Amino acid sequence: MSFWENAFVQTAGYFSIVILCLVVFLAIFELVTKYRNWEQIKNGNISVAMATGGKIFGIGNVFRHSISQHDSLFTMIGWGVFGFFLLLLGYFIFEFFTPKFNIDVEIENDNRAVGFISMMISISLSYVIGASIA
Image (tube, rainbow, N blue to C red; front, side, top):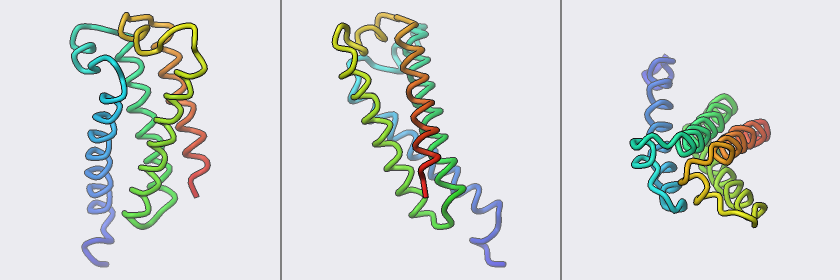
């Protein structure tokens, strides 16, 4: 068995790549929201924490399915990136289907109902995306 086929090495590799992708994807989410996620979380905004937690779970769940379905690191990354963009699209669709109020403003104002729905949308979409990864 070669070094790269070792389960510990592969796990460390997947872990490292997913952490890097998670940081990049959360930075992209930070750019598309009107509020600053980590500043709001530091100030105790539960709604932002729920919405951000849902995004983190969603990204992790998409990568979980991508890792289990692919033996190539590049294919796993490709499906993970594709899944992330679908999650991002889901965020914009959620905003589009709620014209009576602005999702970002409500979450920034700590509207926990909106934060909870945002979290659940990210989680549920990640299951649909994960199930469809081939």
